[in-house]
Amino acid sequence: MKLPELKIGPHVAKVPIIQGGMAIRISTARLAAAVAEEGGIGLIAASGMAFDELRYEIRLARSLTKGIIGINAMVAAREFAGLVKTAIDEGIDLVVAGAGFSRDVFALGKESGTPIVTMVSSVKVAKISEKLGAAAVVVEGKEAGGHLGTDQSMRVLLPEIKKAVNIPVIGAGGVMSGQDIVDVLKLGADGVQMGTRFAASVESNAAPALKEFYLKAKAEDIVLIKSPVGLPGQAVNNPFAQKIIEGTVPVPDSCDACLKHCAKNFCIIKALIRAQQGDVESGLVFSGEYIHKIEEILPVKEIFARLLREVEAIN
Image 1: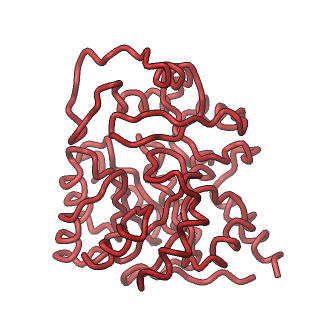
Image 2 (image 1 turned 60 degrees about the vertical axis):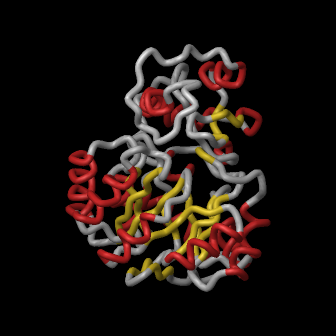
């Protein structure tokens, strides 16, 4: 099978793969640029970054590729609007908004001509997104890592959403192989988003200890935790995740007010940073449902090559 191109606003990706924006600092310039260089769309995870850090990452990515570079930012973050404005000022190609819904972001996109892409888990939100000016929607199902907006499979949600809107629809959650890509495209998707597979890549900014932890994960290790954001989060089980589930995590003794609304059951930013830095015991390790299918850490170039070979072998 030959893969179609993916058009979002004025940008055309030769390979219809968006790399998921994984925070905190898993998806930085090096990973985003490597994906963009292979013809996909690379995303820098902006959540948790200072504005100057985000500027640096965007400029670094630009120096590494002429491909399509976007950001992913959590709507739930207090600095969401500032991150989006900073990225737009730097000439970012597109903005993906997740972990909540923002009407205001569309005005920023319209003013600058920057395509806005929203993460959706229902027909209703997809239709609202299109009406407000979204250039595309990413349909994220229960298979995805991190914050989830549904307990339904992406493969159930996507066909309904595709029928309801006239903008590109991208499937996210559980896409690990060439066969998965073909299956999702056959459901009507215009492209796919892959997060977990790229988290476990050479160019991922995860510490070596975290990448090794990914490789050891088994199917039964995936758990749902209650995030301070107000959404369930999908993660790999470890001592910290167990404490969240049991409600025994110590209440934070200080707060940086990084979220617009926070349940304060634990500090998610600090927990994600600990994991990114390699502390797999007391860090929060977000992950998709099928992480157990990853058997080795590969360069992005090789991941693309294998995916494309698998796709080409399918009639």
